[in-house]
Length: 308
Image (cartoon, rainbow, N blue to C red; front, side):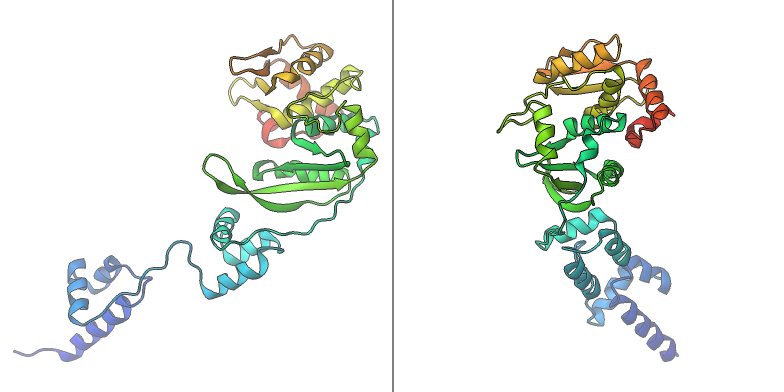
């Protein structure tokens, strides 16, 4: 019986090369050699071959490991994402496993005087900040949003002539890391004036204590403020286009005032969970959206684009 040793040696050589390459599965090798998968394993065992251990999902090549350690803390995440060919959330998780944290330096500079210039746009941003912003007793203002609403942060940064920086925030029911975008401006004059205008005393946190609303005098000011407040604490139903705002019960009075001044037949109430809420029906939401268009106010696109 004649045995083609040349063909056998070539087959052994090919099996050895493929079996030791972790990028090929046993099924891939079987298809290439036109044999059964278990035959691949048996032949490899007889040849004394051992497949290298697969790297866990969070393992990186030496190059990507170096890129992550060099650029994650202070670098541009968009550029790092492109160079590593991974999305931002994957990069965050890889960094978390390695104990890396974003340490982007930021300048707390900007022009907060625009928030008090009396324009309808200023009332829009005051509403957004009342819902989702923070102003410390020192006058330090911070406005943060997640990935979905980062466009609003960049828009606010342009409005107050400041910059946006990114950082990691760990929390939530699953203790996951999420990327947050923030504008921070320190103005011990304007920041304090806004707190005073809102009726906040030292130690007060507006999350639990509602702001005063005597500065909202006209219907138009209330409409602009309401749009901003909705962008921060509201939600729009995908069907029916009705809006809902739900906040702490202490905000019931200001919600009632806003509905009255905007001439909306919507009645805020304390719901079963103990929060103040108000439903803005599908008649009034388009009215607010048209008001924004008429006055060059650019509300949160993610929410209001459903009305287009």
